[in-house]
Length: 107
Image 1 (tube, rainbow, N blue to C red):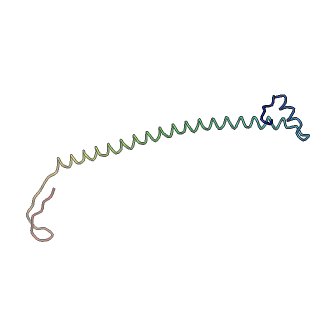
Image 2 (image 1 turned 90 degrees about the horizontal axis):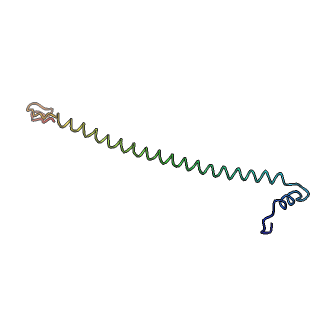
Image 3 (image 1 turned 135 degrees about the vertical axis):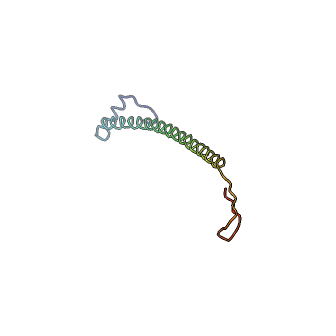
């Protein structure tokens, strides 16, 4: 009060008669509510931190997964390309075409 901390006894005396009303019970309720709020805030911060870590781990796993999908896709495309190049047959024919007579090259 007025910049000074009151002793528990002085607080109780002050709260017991403010304008003829006893505010001791309201004070205790407000104090415990504030303590609960502080606990919930700290707990929520810890949970948010845990959520952030889980989110970061999830994003990291997604990053690794996407990288693996892209790399394995390129490997599969390379295998298909190698197969297609190794089994390709080039064929030259001389004969009628849709525009008349000519040479066609198939590969």
